[in-house]
Image 1 (tube, rainbow, N blue to C red):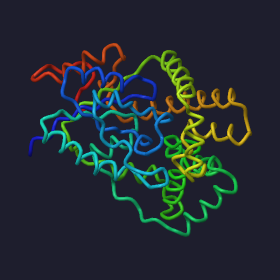
Image 2 (cartoon, rainbow, N blue to C red):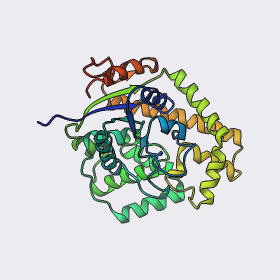
Image 3 (cartoon, one colour):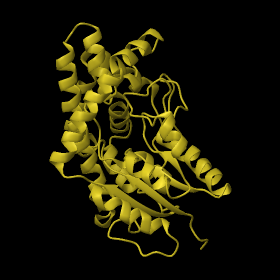
Length: 316
């Protein structure tokens, strides 16, 4: 069998400090990052998605940020194809690729590929989309939670696109989407991957999240959301339903006050981080997790030639 390309993945829930760790490593090693963040792919969305600044990009160049408009489709399969191209390009220039991000599906798609999915049904999708417009995305999720709780567990309550797809599979095939994905498990891993999942303790993580949201507001989150709306990107777009924009738009529409919007963003981001942790613990081996204070030592060991692998960063 051909020798697989070595690849380091730095992941963790939102607010865990993975980007800061990657930036610190880039001061010592010739790294280039491939962003595995499903929101950083969109242009014009900088503050809400915590994209690296120009100064940070000068230290650690990033691939797969700002590659799509907010109203364009971008999915895990597209990410995997473009990420593989980016990895090849980075290696061809004598640099070290490192995957940085917290979108588990993107990382799985890159490492294992995606299973063939059942065909789509325009009729079913149209009906579900109309239902979502009438009663809200959370209504679809509640239906999914009754029909396929395992699938619902891995989908956000307001993630209309993924809820529709999971329900479409149920109605089209008569089988649960979660069962289909289990049966069509990912094939052999494509890379000699070492996953380092940065996992702060819960209290510290939630404090980081609350502080991060306040900084987003200080940096101009409200103005960014208003600018996106002015550019014609409607609030119903999946990209505009991200945790930060959803409640800011409600504030801009005078439905809630700014303090309430901030509090709701903090609450929903903490809930999202909790779901991320669940997904990561179910997808990554126990040896992949480490506290933030240990991440630099572990990753430096992986980056140094012929160095031993630490307690995290074990083969997945």
